[in-house]
Length: 370
Image 1 (cartoon, rainbow, N blue to C red):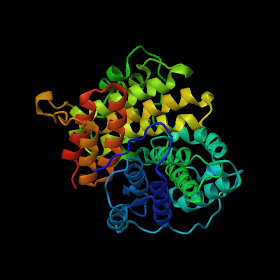
Image 2: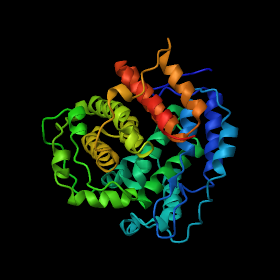
Image 3: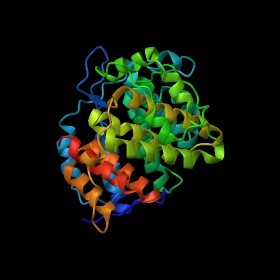
Image 4: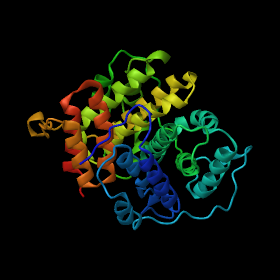
């Protein structure tokens, strides 16, 4: 299997970029969720654009067209827009899942007429308080889209990549919801200790929206958020990387609580980390605070009461090239959550060479069904 690791925004191989744009154009006929209901309860999230971005950026030996053929069979077409978003009343549509097609049209128009970085800079702080939207998939999809746009390396961004950013922002806006009990970090704990000490909701059942609602009645929840050491602007990239590493490492012993949802404790802050270079530094501290809150909220609502004993968890890979091994296993597995999480774990391993980070990726492959 060939692997072409990429982690610094320098770009894809040209053929892979062209294939990604073709995949985006195909996927944009579909909505961002499937399997929900008319009341707006969450179904499963369309990970197609995010997974394909990883497969092609990493140069994995996967037939992407065949992968998409299997994947799109689960998706429903995106409904038609019918009630345009307006510049002076957009707040009324925030968090209204029925307006998702309208948001997609709005952001598509914005991105056709303005530099994408300007649109992102305007809307990022507006959407950031709702980072848990759609189980954090709004910010994750935006992060993957930004990574693709940054890699394009041309003054005129390709239209399908701009449309992918529009869809990511639209989903975030339509599923927007503020986090109960949000408090900014003001303590002394490291991210490892703070994440380990997050207060858990008493009853771990139901959809994520119901679980998040229970946070406001959870003793110690706001204190959990405040317990983390606050961040200074210059330290945000390093501290965000530490958060991603801690959440990835934590999956090794907590992932059995909810194998799919708990990957987002790592992939959501990783999406923020990849978006930072496209944002003014004035937005960095709030971005860190929101990423921390998202990771803490996923942990609070899905992590098990008891961590798995280290003697029972997945060992680290023993291959001479462990990153290639875990990426190979993720590609063979084929699940979109495994692909995203393994990409995040591989990046984390590149920073510290902690074998537990790659062991966590293998753990996800074991826990998440094909």
